[in-house]
Image 1 (cartoon, rainbow, N blue to C red):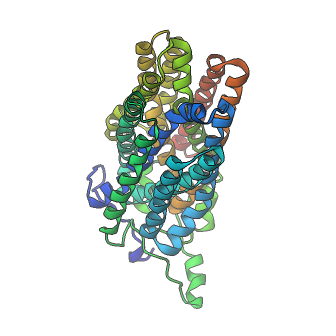
Image 2 (cartoon, rainbow, N blue to C red):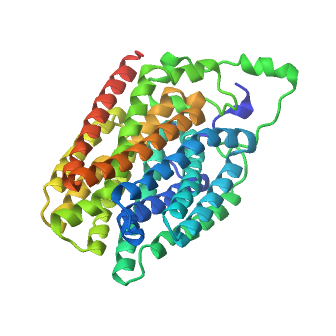
Image 3 (tube, one colour):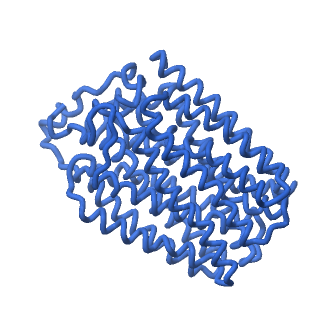
Length: 436
């Protein structure tokens, strides 16, 4: 591996040290966290504004999925060709444009188009930042990625409260969502101040024709060594064109297991943030503003556990933490599903958040660790799979709620958690034994 391709690892083995690049990457999570946790709980309110059914409102999840799918294909190409910083500028610009269009949307068609652009930008930002963060922190990738997601959910904690306050004041949900414009602009300024190099990878430079064959024959970590631990991230470089061996690792069983965990995690989080407001209103009779604000309980649980579990993941196998997260989420669902008061519903959402909080960051860290030399490709696959989950899960649950009621529809939530737990257990066992 050429010296210029060495990974920019920010800490000594076993440590976790944050620097300016770390916090700059965190900015993407802050922006996307605000969007998700301010807009998703507002979907029910949007349905009231436009006088549409829950299934129609659930189409915003489909639009968000479409943006994620486009981002899955675009992100690795943007990063490789134009560099990670340019990709982040494009992403943040799309977020600003999408939010402006969303808060000004007069009807369903306009809001769906706005969400498509918004989701494209948000997923591009995460898809560019998450592998860069993992490369930058190497063996501490699980801590860095978990804390980054914690930063996003922490700022998102204010989102439902802001929506609830705006609704209570008679302003509607739009002013709260519009805060994302300011957050994206600040993050863009931070990105512009970070020099290109290391994990903030520069644009690809075309190699002379004679050297391309040499690059194609460059070695990559063997699949058997790749899946042993997240420390493999410290041993590889930023590869503009991942080798066939590196890409093949993404088709082995451990990678598919952790990809299934990503899908389960995204489906659980999105369906809950979309429809918990309606469930609380239906079960407890809470007013719209109060019911929307209860979603903050979910985000609070997610944020708290991410800051706790980040350092712990350096000592406890991430796959074990991941499986436990799915189990805890079922407990939280049970409390929420049987709640008869807003206070109990908040308690259930907090417990569910403790489970949800570890699911996505641990899943994505373990997935990238199965093929660290193809980190951006692994992230793209996760973005694609997650986008499909976003497109199907909220819409399906909304349509089911129209048919059988929101309470009965929510009974499908623990099914996804059980499937995710099984996938985490199998994937973890395979990585410990080195089997695929």
